[in-house]
Every structure is written in C-alpha cells, then in structure tokens.
Image (cartoon, rainbow, N blue to C red; front, top):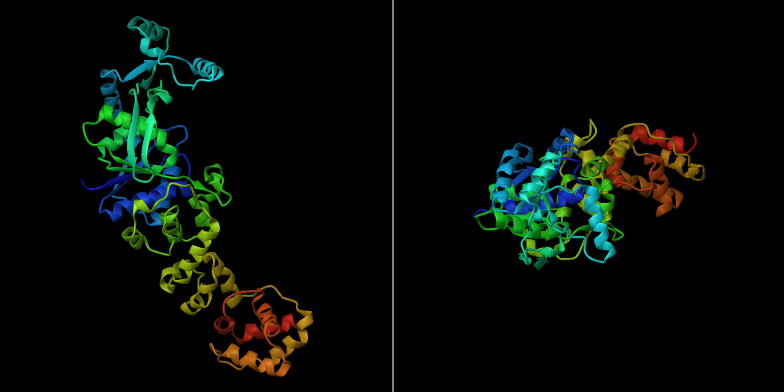
Amino acid sequence: MTPKVRFAPSPTGYLHVGNARQAVVNFLFARAHGGKFLLRLDDTDTERGKPEYEQAIFHDLAWLGLDWDETAKQSERLARYAEAAEILKASGRLYPCFESEDELSAKRAALVRRKLPPVYDRAMLKLTPEQRAAAEANGKVPYWRFKLSDGAIAWQDLVLGGREFRLNTVSDPVLIRADGTPLYTFTSVVDDIDHNTTHIIRGEDHVTNTAVQIDLFLALAGKALPRFAHLPLLNDEDGAKLSKRLGSVSLRQLRKDGIEASAITAYLARLGSRKDPAPLSLAALAQQFDLNDFGKAAARFDTKQLLALNRKILHGLSFEEVQSRLPAGADEAFWLAIRGNLDLLSESRLWFDIAHNDIPVVDLPEDAPYLATALSTLPAAPWDATTWKAWTHDLAVQTERKGRALFHPLRLALTGEDHGPDMATLLPLIGPARSAERLARAAGQ
C-alpha cells in the first residue's frame, strides 16, 4: 500500500512551530516514501474556528514549500460521522448519557477525596429504556460516550518504541456532544479509515488519544490499523515546555522577523533527531529523511540555532533568489557585498541606505585630524575592490596608524556601524561623493 499521512490542524488560531514541525515531518515522510500528503482541516469547532485562520494555514504551508496532494474538511463530512455513530450505537459501543457537568464534577471530586482516579463510573450503562424515555421527556438531550474495551492497548510506536496503555485508567470518551457535534477523537478515526491513512505522525501529547483511538479503530474498521509515531514535544531554550509560550514562535511572527522559510523547514526537519540541522532544500531533506533518527527525549527549540541556520542559508542565496525581496534598485553587486553579513534579509534595508542614501551624522571629534587626512587622501574615481586597500595603505604610511585605530574610525564615519560587510566591497557602492561628505561631517568640517 502506498504510504499516506495527514496533517490535521484546526483553524482556531495561527500555526506555530509545534504545528509546523508535525507538518514538515509528515511531508518529508510522504515524499521520502513516494506517498501521499493529505491536508485535513479539523474545522468542526464553529465557535473558535475562523475563515482567516483557515486561509492562514494554506498560506503558511505554501510559504514553507509544503505542497499537499489532497485536501479534506471535517465540516463537509458530518453525515459520514452520523453514519459511523449509528454503527457504534447498534453494536452497543456508543451509549447515551444525561449527567450535567455539575453532576460529573461532583463524582470526580468524590473519587479524588477517596484517592481514586477520577474515571467515569459508567452509570448511564445501567439506564433502562424507561429511565431514558423519562429523561428525554423532561427535556434532557443525551451526549454520547464510547465504551472502551477491557484490558490494555499495545502498539509498536515508530519513534517511542513499544507502548502499552490500560484503558481502565481513563474515562469512556465523549464522542458526540448533546448538540450533536462530533468530537476530534471520533472524527479523526473515521477520517483516517475513509482516507486510507497508513501512518499517523503527531506529538507525544497524543499518546493517550492513540490508545483510545486504536480501540475505536477496532470497533469501526474492517481493515488494518495505521502505524503510529509520536514525536517528543518541544522545549524552549530554558527547558520549559514550549507550549506555554507558543504565541511567541508563531510562523507569522517568524516570517515577520525575517526568518527564511527554508531555515524553518531545515531546522524543524531534524530537530530532536540524531542529524544536525543543515541548510538543505526540502528535496534534499526528503532524500535523507528517516523516522528512526528521532530520539525519545524532548527536543529543544533554540532560536539561536535557528538564526545560525538562517545565516548559512542567506549567505548561500544567489541574487536571483532574493532580488524580489531586496530594496528597489538593489543590484547583484550590492547583494554579493552584504549577504555574508546578514542574520536576516530585512537587514538589507539598512545596508542599502548606507550605500545609496543619507545616514545620520557620526561625530568623531577625537579622530577629527585623522579623518581630515583620510578625506584629503581619498583616491580618484573610478573605484573598485582594490581602492580600500590602497587608500588605507597610504593612510597607514602618513599617520602611522594600524589595526583598529586605522580602520575603525573610517568604518564608523562611512557607515555609522561598528561592524558590517567587507569595506573593500562596500566602499565602491558608497562612492566618492558620499564618502567625502560623510568624512567631512565626521571630522566636523
């Protein structure tokens, strides 16, 4: 069977790096094995779901370069979920419940006081037809729970290894609310059956869901179960759970900050694996992708590592690859001069202004005599990559300066920055007129 995976976000917010990691890993798994990648929108939450979030999901995935083979929306499959629910009702696995939330809370509190796990007591299974009819006659509408099997569920996880979960440690899950809305535990299984999902790759926080869903698969499906892989969750630089502060690492924010899409995919593709992040394309990452590379420990999302990878990618980009995102008027010479000094592409605006526009006055009174000498010895045009070396050599001879004392005042006067691109390539871009004007201002003339 051709492998098929799915990425199933809910359009109730913007994608963050935790979502993106699952999307990247599923995409690479599909491409590595010649399989299919399904984008499924779990959009049955009509209260929190918004069209703008849905469109943002499509936009973010396209920005990352993750193309999908099929699209599905749960909101278009409600009739299918109702049909599957009737199958479970007929087999006695889906049963009606009438307790209020207050009644359930009281039951849980009583169990906790007795130091027992707050597992649902299945009281509604003892409901007689007459009692149910009376409840409904009084205006009560049932919600529906799935009766879990006895014993344990075991599976061989493709990342975590052998897993076993005793079903009597959790409550029978609610699959359908009183208003008829089907819940994720149920809809996800029905979709995976109908879409022929062969591998479910998701976060470790779904392990309990997996045990319950395997039991649901067995109750509904007359076919082989999918294989499961659970990626350990992400921590921040300090080791805390990243989920507590995901808003600070949304894809929208990273894009706004100027992080390259290819840096994000390259970083997330190997985060938590035995392979170090490398500035590789999605095609190259797919060729080298292996789920066996992922470890069982939580991975640390380090923005410093992401920035370092972003730098490597920027430094290797051609002018043609970035031309449309550079300031208007930027040419190849400008890009080749600055790219080796960028952390973020947005920094190109600063260097374009330095090369072509006015910059704030830098007052260097302590170096005024030296800068006046530098002004008087400026080489004649035209300038090229050898001009800086020849000019500073003459200055060294005349002033007996060397090292930082020779070079740093010139850089400050000409660029207003302590550090930056190689002055040999930057100086011709600034040109004789701007250079003379800036040296004069810095010298107080």
